[in-house]
Amino acid sequence: MLAALLDPASVAGIIVQSIVVLGCLILGTRYGGMGLGLISGIGLTALVFLLGLAPGEPPVQVILTIVAVIGCAATLQQAGGLNVMMQYAEKFLRKKPEMITILAPLSTWLLTVLCGTGHVVYTMFPIIQDIAVKKGIRPERPMAVASTASQMGIMASPVSVATVSLASMLAEHAGVTDTSYSIPQILMVALPSSLGGVLIAALWSLRRGKDLDKDPVFQEKLKNPEFKKALYSKGESLMGTTFPKQSYRSMWIFFGAIVVVTILGASEALRPLVPNDDGKLAPMSMTLAIQMIMLLAGAIILLTCKVEANKVASTQVFKAGMTAVFSVFGVAWMANTFFASHIDVLKGGLGDVVQSAPWTYAIVLFVVSQLVNSQAAALVAIAPLGLALGVDPKIIVGFYSAAYGYFILPTYPSDLACIGFDNTGTTRIGKYIINHSFIIPGLISVIMSCVIGTVLAQALL
Image (cartoon, rainbow, N blue to C red; front, side, top):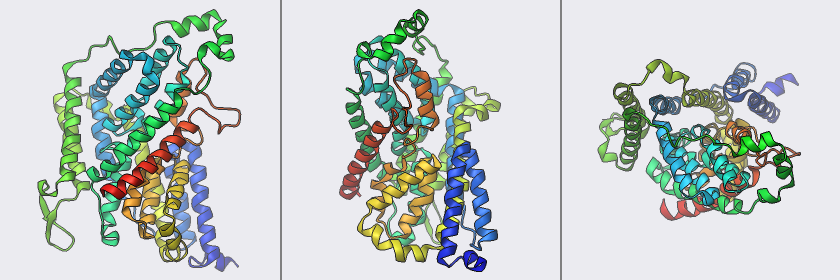
């Protein structure tokens, strides 16, 4: 009996391995990104040492690309460039305060697109709340969709971990699928579909919940003079802040790097020729190009913008980014070990299903993203499987937004921060946990983005 359970090729063996993988994912989410990466090591060791699977390949190039991007973005933050961006965003919001429910998600989406990470938007939440309250608008309306939009922007960013990972995986599997899409091609679909999903969710949010003057819970709170004074006092703002010239310089250097990456991705002719695996000269891969340009941009910011190098590693962007790296490392290696060992069985059992109903790939990606709390980790774990099962790369790109499913349970840091910054209490977690403020904006954003993305992918790619 024990021998049957330990036999990697047996049905019982596959079931036991599946339980090990899922158990590690579920347990790991309780400890955050670092914990997820470490606990994935338990599953990886069990699969190899106890259950007899051959170890898979860790996503080395994906990890190195993430490290390069995070290093550059963290240097930008230390130079003050992110604060400059957020000041521009605040000016944008305060010009039309009555449109905060539409403009707030647009601003957080754009910040993520430019910076490659949704963790840069925390400073925007108290600003959004202040503007909404001063205009008598229920803060839940702009704040919940703004938090969702900050994560949707990851799919539209040329320097996000998820986009870089997707482009790298499509390139690595080009020999299997005969198709590879560059970052500009991915963004040609992902940018308008992501933005479309966010705008539709924002329009839905315009009428959600009761107005503040009709909300009995809020009106009861206003009877407390201390609460009322704190709520309507001068809120947090970057409007009066003066930044040094080097902060602006760092921002433009970072934007320049994004432009260069996009141009290199669009034109192979601009990349140097290097020997490929066959010894023939071919344009250098975009994975290496991104790594080089991001390291170069970070170095230029470091040398020309008076950055305190010893403080770069303590920035919020660096900490969040390196946590994501560790999570991707552990989860992807464990998943690759499991799926690579059973790819023939999976092709026989699931290949026809996935090809005839490609939306099943999107559902699996969506569910896994909730388990791993990361778009990049979900993509690195599931996209290679989809490609190996014969899913058209166009479908993979069209369903990119399905990698954002970690709003289902309100445990993600940006959602929790959003709740914490809403002093009115309108942005909240409901009695049944799942009935929280982000669930409907999240579902609208993802579903509509997948619909738009699928149509665009078929039309443009």
